[in-house]
Image (tube, rainbow, N blue to C red; front, side, top):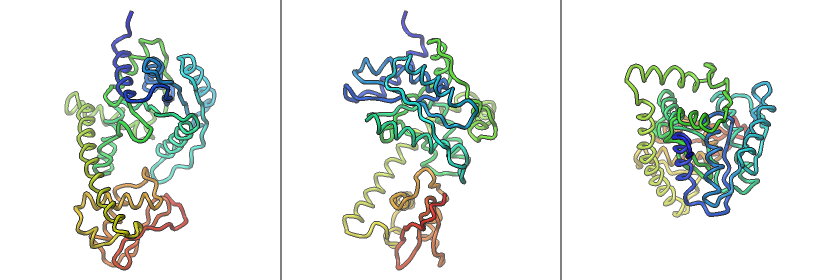
Amino acid sequence: MGPGVAVAEVRTAVRACLAGLTAGELVLAACSGGADSLALAAATAFVAPRLGLRAGAVTVDHGLQPGSDERAAEIAALLAKLGLDPVRSTAVTVAPAGARGPENAARVARYGALDAAAAAYGAAAVLLGHTLDDQAETVLLGLARGSGGRSLAGMPARRGHYRRPLLAVRRAATAAACAELGLEPWQDPHNCDFRFTRARVRHQALPALEAALGPGVAEALARTAAQLRADAECLDDLAFAESGQLRQAGSDPAGLDVAWLAALPAAIRTRVLRDAAVMAGCPPGALAAGHIGQVDALVTAWRGQRWADLPGGVRARRQAGKVWFSSTGRGEG
């Protein structure tokens, strides 16, 4: 008997994501034990060897709940039983929540562990289990925060060694895939804890939108993200070209000419400023549209203000007709 409908859907998505990798390369599935990542891990264990690839997995223990170490061990054992090898279980220390909250602090710790695993094993790709529903939630969160086009573009299907095979797959399909395979996912209580913004969006905001506007809201939000991402990537390329011309001219990349910046279209200028801030040490994930707006004001609405403080202890200041980025040495978020 062939696979069930949901299993086939998840495997097809993973197969498409892995296309283009070279035989013998290693892919790692990031797995928390939830339905999305467990379905992803099972599909990776099935699909990767048939494409000539090696398949392993990583599970991260954030240490935020009682018994998390035992649960991580159980998940690692299940991943090995699925045929994944190597399987790495990593415990991390989540830093105190900063201005962006505990969810972001956990995310930073998790990606640090995934990056370390990819480096340790020489993995060609790390697969993440984000679904269409996660994408819709991300877009809605960005809209509520007024985070701009970059945030509304949602999560990319690929960035660096990270790949998200399931961005076109509904969360219901991953749960059904686990049921078809006889796998029992772990239910993270944080997903239903309304202290967390994403939980409120998932269980309150999106259902309310569906009730008011009819079904298909999640799909529409995901389509919007895809369309905005194409636009954002085009603008990013144009901004990179502008920055490249500046570098080729031999100018100091830390000091950006105000007249040159002011002549750029706003969508390009803000991207150039963002890239300069990141190059100066700002953590990209902590750099919000509001921060870039403060830097942009040094160009377009300068009234003598001296600087704008940015995440990561970076300061942007206007001096001698240029915008300069430097470290304050404080490393604040």
